Image (cartoon, rainbow, N blue to C red; front, side):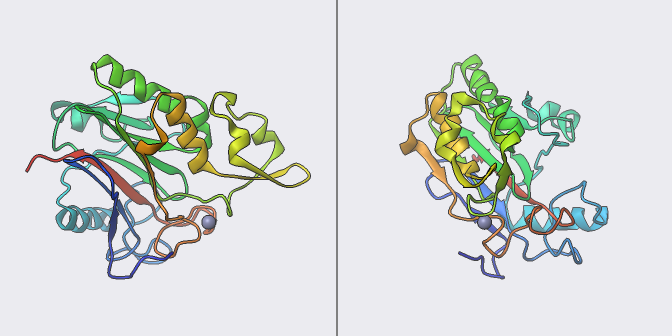
Amino acid sequence: MDISKSQSYISAENAPKGIEIKTSTRYGGFSNTPFDSLNMGYFTGDDITTVIKNYYYYQNITKTYNIITLNQIHGNTVLEVNKKKSAEIMFSKADGLFTNENNLPLGVITADCLPVMIAGNKCISSLHCGWRSLNAGIIDNAFKLFKKYDDIPVYAYIGAGICEKCYEVRDDLVQQLNTLYNPEQALIEKGTGQYLLNMKKLASNALIYNGLSIDNIEISKYSSCCSKGFYSYRLENGKTGRMVTTIQRAVR
Ligand SMILES: [Zn+2]
């Protein structure tokens, strides 16, 4: 399933009322090859003024202003943020954001890793989930913050990311997967010591482990690697742009 070249973003379809979740595509921006064209990654080697132009374009068409993003490091830290602290938190070395404020879009930058967005009745969280951060309990850490604010997640969105057909991993990685999330359900053995890993399944297992019902998890049908219109780190050998996925509780 591909993206139309006139489409600069896709939206979650089943998010609760007031929760807006959007993922940028690679269409409509200003970046040149290999970042063409709507590169939302600040740390990719693309011309930074072009990336900023892409953000101006994107924020206007999505009405998603002042997107906070991080300098992601495949860890399990989730930072609490509010409007007052947003400039201070911007570009911190971490992989998750959490807030109880409205109109504060939290962003995750990806090209194959999964954006996992969680909404409670008051709070929201955005998580950058590769296998390392998933494994290290980034989803568990986000759920702890909901609890701290006396809230409970009611919905989660697993966005466009690498699909189970494209993500080949070796036995040494498989041996390290966190058994709490039933990784055997997310693996298909391909050959001796080689497997295909279904990251969306692994992430949904981690959400279910924390108490969310499968009925309240929306999984994007798009693959960053085989749906045309996204950036894929694996497919493009690391020389490519990034999508941004945002979540906000919008009060307009
Ligand atoms: Zn794929």
